[in-house]
Every structure is written in structure tokens, then in C-alpha cells.
Amino acid sequence: MKQKDIALIVVIIFVSIILSLFISKAIFAKPSSRQQAVEVVQPLTASFPTKTNNQYFQGGFDPTQLIQIAPNNNSNPFNSTSGN
Image 1: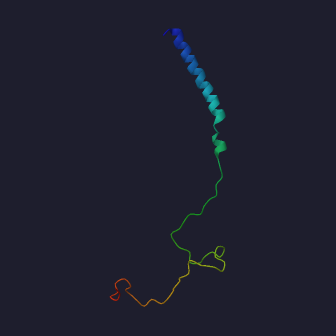
Image 2 (image 1 turned 90 degrees about the vertical axis):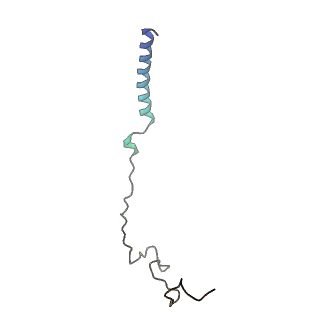
Image 3 (image 1 turned 30 degrees about the vertical axis):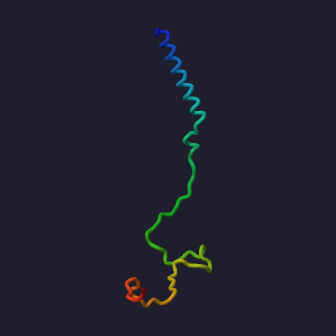
């Protein structure tokens, strides 16, 4: 390679770097235009509410209420001696 060829390659590299810099700034979005407002969510707590919100359960099913289907007199249901 001659000295003139090396200088031409360096100039081509420099011009392509400058050109790619301008093209990339035109194509890609700026950080200021990528900002988006979000809704703030209340933090979760470990306690379970004792009173339900009537907005969701208006006169219907309330999952916080204790439901008892029948009285349970068997204190040891899985180790019973009666059965098969």
C-alpha cells in the first residue's frame, strides 16, 4: 500500500463516522422524547383488610366473610377409624 492509499482510507473512515453520527441522531429518538408519565401505585402491606370495599362487592358475594357450610363436630377428620 502506498502512503496515498492509507490517507484516502483514513479520510473515508472519518467521513463515514461523521455521516453515521448525523444519520443516527436523525433516526433514533432523543431521551427527552422517550419519557412517559406513569400512575403511582400504593405499596402493598402484609395486613388483610377486615372491612371490604363496597365499591366491588355491592350486595353480592363478600370473600372476607367466614362461610360455614355445616357444623363440624369431628375434631380429627383424617385419622378416623370408621370407613372402608
